[in-house]
Length: 280
Image (cartoon, rainbow, N blue to C red; front, side, top):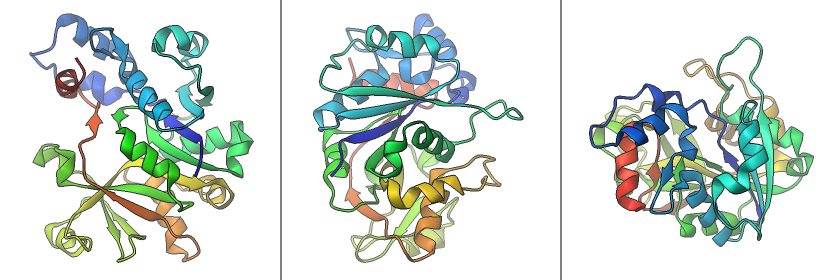
């Protein structure tokens, strides 16, 4: 069990800004999408940022220590977060880490780098249990509570791919996870072919994917985050590569917690309309 979670929210939102305009969106909403961090796009009658809905679920699920990864330029957000988020944060401790971009790059170095920089800025995470999630996904209270309370020190929510309710085109681009009969991770497979998918079904006959809702033991995982190599295909340091390295050496088990439910995702402008239907 842990009371700490790291929210990754330092991305450049480049896919959101470059994506095609959805004709169902208002001019104001398109302007938001093109100018704001996607996690700060506002929804609902009270015009609350997307990340605030995530934070409400996180706080409800029992997390007390919330670390939000921000970019170096997010000074205004860090200084005015209580006014910007528009929710009650009195029951939680909010901390901000900064994901600095290397001199030779224009974009952040990836999700594994975000966690490494956060662990270095808050050394308590190097020795404690903590969870990790994306800032542009809205996870359910059940999923967040489950990952927080699990007895396993290193774990992730293994979502049923079909239960996510994404389009076939979109879901086909997801990496799939292969787990054994005890739901321990065996492999993460990028761009799987049909035969590989069929061979990777779990004991329930389901295809599983990760949506980056995870739990780590800082004592055991820090060295893997610190030594993570740049993924040649993505040109970034990615959490899946950290997990694969942890499990491949046979010393650390990463347990997949089986779950089937929809997860709201805010990647492109077409996602905004879908979120609006859920949050109104």
